[in-house]
Amino acid sequence: MKNTAVLLLSTPIPLARKGAVAAITQFLVTRNGSILHADDHVDSSRGMFLSRLEWDLDGFDIPISSFEEHFRPLAEQYRINYHLAPTDYRPKVVILVSGYDHCLADLLYRYSTGELECYVVMIVSNHSKAQPLAEFHGVPFHLLTKPQDKRESEREMLELIGQDVDLIVLARYMQILSPEFVGQYLLRIINVHHSFLPAFVGAKPYHQAFERGVKLIGATSHYVTATLDEGPIIEQDVVRVSHRDTVDDMLRKGRDLEKIVLARAVRWHLENRILVYQNKTVVFS
Image (cartoon, rainbow, N blue to C red; front, side, top):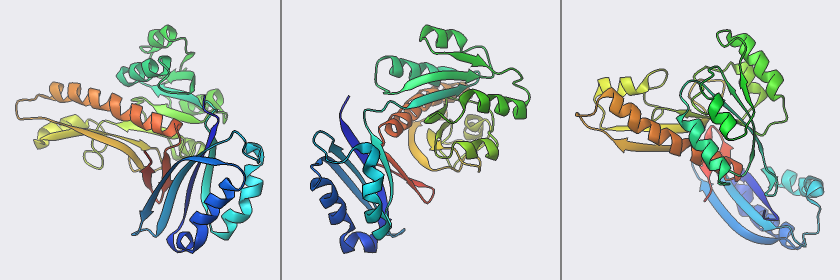
């Protein structure tokens, strides 16, 4: 594990030009913080300066637990919104899944090989199909007691998951979560939609794409918000299709995309590379 910290931040462009960037850099350097990576983005249309800074904590004068106390005056002066993340922390992840388990299988493989640096603390499902996969990887599995009762299922999940979780991954969990449930985990739920959003929202997007005669199909990973399929988009990818492809061909090609797109989004979130602002994201390299 690296002994570093990541600071994701945003500030209005005029304040960035009036010294915010220099002040942040000086704050870290004067406290023996050796900056390892710095990645900036300016969104002129939204008037925002956005940045990701990673620095070495070896020799850093401020205990990471006291960082906010020391940084707050600077943040208030330059109206900086920020998120601090020590990289030696392994986030706690819960995966929700339904009958399609291809995304779950891919995530668990990447988890077992160490590509996804986290703790998968539980898999929750409204189908029993995923249980052998969970047991193979040594991850606790919970089958919802009343999967047909949405309200009861969400109550059960809230009791199971609680608030001590950093990320919930919807690995093709084919239930619409209520605004009340989503509100408990704001910007902590990542979904993969089997469509190149905003095209073909809702159910059976590949069937919709087939009927429309498209030449490209895609998959989208995004944060879940109260508005269905309209959360901040993290990653998308596409593959070509032709008039020779059947719906089953599209489903097969789409499943390959879904696995890749979801895994990228989860990894970037775990590595603190995603900054969300105004229902958009910047994904830093």
